[in-house]
Image (cartoon, rainbow over all chains, first blue to last red; front, side):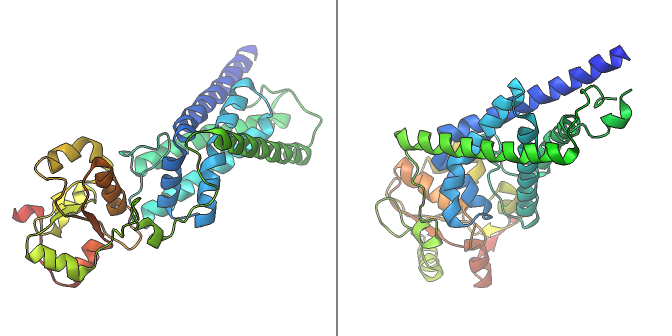
Length: 149
Length: 176
């Protein structure tokens, strides 16, 4: 029973740290190059023009704060909820543009060229979403009330 | 098994969710605060609002219009007075392209621009194109070439579709 608990702890903290590092890594280049990130957002052709620059300014900071909070374990319910929302939105945007055949730079981890969207990028995001959903279940204590004895 | 270690909480799911929503709001407010503060004091400040319309994007930094009509492009093509560059991915180029067009996919531009532009002088007229009214590849490529010092770059918006609809000469990579 104790061993199980340790394994569970290990999985929880690993998922938290991995997702935290991913979000910090993803935000870094976008903070350094806001104009290029605004171009990436524009190319997705989803947001109205008036929201493109505003989003390019705050979104990388939301990601970096989420990354830091995941690593230090602060405001976990809110941070995890944001993680799930953002990843679902990102996957939706990728699928939408892939389906309509628009060839855009992913902008997932870097604002530079050479990373156009593909099934692979969607699968990566889906893997991150799986981690995020797992953390959601742990943080919100779903199932554990009847499971832990 | 992996989700059973957390301590039981006296809070209901609804209370926890409400707490999460409040934290979400606070996190958003913090991101907005840091983002806008940082942007305000950085050298390369991004304006909060910018004209992203298609018309505005067809104007170069020097105020020149970058787009070219199909009629003009056809004339230049027939006179062999311009180099036409296809900004679409290589697969699309191989399936079909404007006859004589060079392939310089925007996503590989850093690796390939030297090879593609080595015999082009900076004054040569270059016409970039991709496919679709909202396709950005030709815009991005045109701006990239302008930044490199090519001073005579134009964009044939929705070039591939317009060219085919006008029954102008095309070729496929297999036919080469």
